[in-house]
Length: 236
Image (cartoon, rainbow, N blue to C red):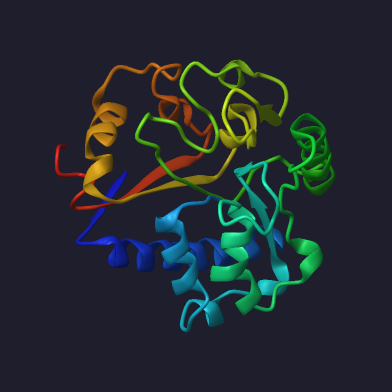
């Protein structure tokens, strides 16, 4: 499903409202809300809206559990760190218990960090289905999403939920298709004219996840929602 907005601000407000709505639905269904966040400027704006009323007041934050779809393996203090951005924009402004926030700490050893994060996720889901209630993803100009890059070995992973991606600088840790595709809802946030070409390729080209990794996001029993602004969809 494609939702088109006039500008990044309208897109961001809609993403914040989506978070709040999905949180209410998940808490009614299972008593908790499990969300995986993404980095980037468009999500930052969404998180900032979410930290304000009325969205902030509509969420039972003591039942929210926050994870990340990927992380650059840099220190938390580095401006490129996805978790740092989410803390600045959202998490320090809402009453969420700190032990329900699960950043990916991978600055020292990406492979060990990936294994550790997978253990955290498996312990969290336990006997329940390993399904995030909501995953926010972005879209890179090369078609990547999370840290799943074109032709990366991570695209072939069929068992592990989390892997290190060491062919890029800095290295990264990312969730993989086996976990991402179990989500109830995946929401791509895409804005800007620089994304128009790749959005057209991903949505209209024959499926080739090795070339366009975002095409590999196909939730089993779940849904994909594309939130895009007019500039990003100008070539559709």
